[in-house]
Image (tube, rainbow, N blue to C red; front, side, top):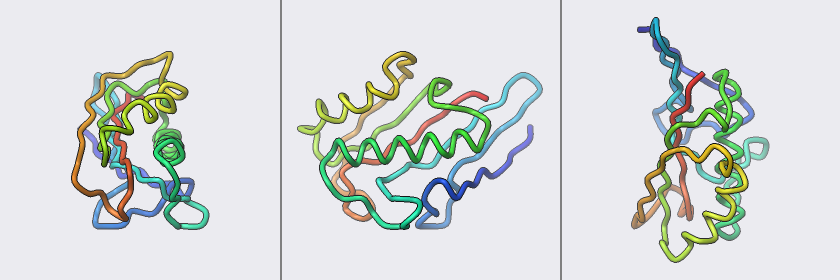
Length: 130
């Protein structure tokens, strides 16, 4: 098994001691595991405030950039975990999520959490094949 750190300037810098993603290669498969992505603009390096739809869109765009750098893409995502601050935003989040994953529909867990870094409304992580 080979482990490789994935990094791209097209996604936000990690805000802690972790990697944007890790690519794992074995003889039979290649997978990428992303870290959770917040709604941080990678160009400005600043948090994108706004509503749940805006934050969901930016989080998924950040995931997309990381997956691309790893040699994958959103349609190859097999599992996501969504951390959401308020479950009453579930329907609005799903509207945006469906724009990106509607055709591929990966497995997903959605968990309401008390607080996220930078007081974000949402954080999304993914596992994809390459």
